[in-house]
Length: 477
Length: 137
Image (cartoon, rainbow over all chains, first blue to last red; front, side):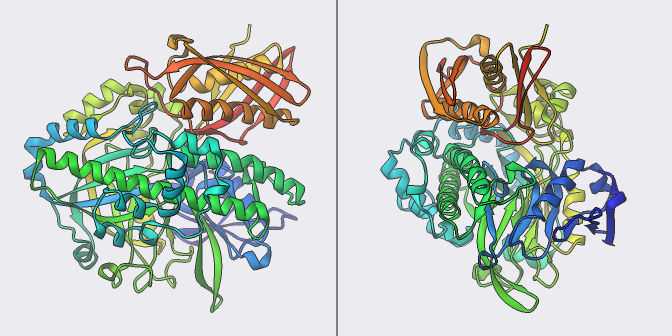
């Protein structure tokens, strides 16, 4: 990205100067110059397009891990006011609705699992359906799926998946309101039939990690983290149902925008006013897909616990937190001193509520919400804590991952999957996958420097670093 | 000679291109490009055939509709497709895809979630039609 049009607000936040005659809301890019230089120029074009959408409140923003997406950039954040003609955009949420990370803390330390790591990795690989074409054991009828869409992780819990305390540590206690299964197509439901409790592929993973370093002792104590402790992170989303909801409404909303006279700079922004019938239908379908994702991660948590206990009978895995990345959520934020109900789009961005927020569980309320920045399978991941909104100027949002630095095809040309897996094993990281091609595409070198993303997230005031995690074993889709 | 299908760069996802002597053939090859991200399509056995019909007057949106119907039908039936045929009568499109259930020794690539409107274009040059868009993986 050429920084010529960017104006430095501070070394961790830049504004995009408008072109002559360009009418749009402000654009803010949270990152340092080095991260910005590494971003595709399309990020600027896409976030400037978002800043032209009706009903936007404040600025259109990108997080430090931003990269070229479709419609919105990945790492894009934008809030809209329904009362001011604000829109909801399928391109602002993405296909993998509510893709996110469930992080589990264990009662185990590295020396306990080290001699059993091979067995653990193999057991997890057998237990967790991962990769293209893999189905889960749970087959649900359309009526049962309707119940999952209404109940989310709470449905999963009531059907024997997980522990009651899990719900305390999932956004919206595992179930968002406003899900409307009738707004979800039959094809979307058929697509989900065998996909509950599956990981998917691409950048999805289940990873065994160890806490390498604590940065914030108070937050770490609240989160129950200590150096040397073993964690498990599960990265996946709403599977076929969410993908089909994204697919269906991309065309529905693109046509609605045209019919309603919304002149979109990019058709992929596919949107409709929140108060329109199409906007309300999408909102209901998207909420249904969020609940599918929350149920999916709840079932995978159950499968991971069983796999751990098969190898280490005394192992306990407690939910540390479950965050979603690709969502649009109705939230109240203080704007110019007044509380306003806003529809906050986070596409490849994490919600990051600060200390004292009423939505946080009592255990975390004093320190803020856990924010999980997933890394690549060879480097590291981070746990951060949300800041108060006086510090976080991005509607309580933060980074979600390392962000790709290179395309999948470039990665395929550069790495060989089998060789990469061997190299990682030499470095003490076990990979289990059915796809050598997928492993090459997901090579750690294809991602940005996750440590720099975490630092930029902290320096920009979005969240503060709590713990650095290192991967030990990874089941890749 | 033109390559029947190819790929172009996109930061996080993948750009696909299908080419042919007709729009329909370009769309068929675009479908091969999509499914070749998931497996080796030449190794997929045509054990089951699936008919696909849809209405779409906009040629570019028709490419997205075609690819997304194929992805939806494949996933809902736990199949992988390797062969594709498509015909057009005005705004009515009718086609078919052949494939088989996933089996152990089929190569596993990356799952394609959907075709997007990004970099979407259907163009003709020197008698060759080219259909392209970014797919989300």
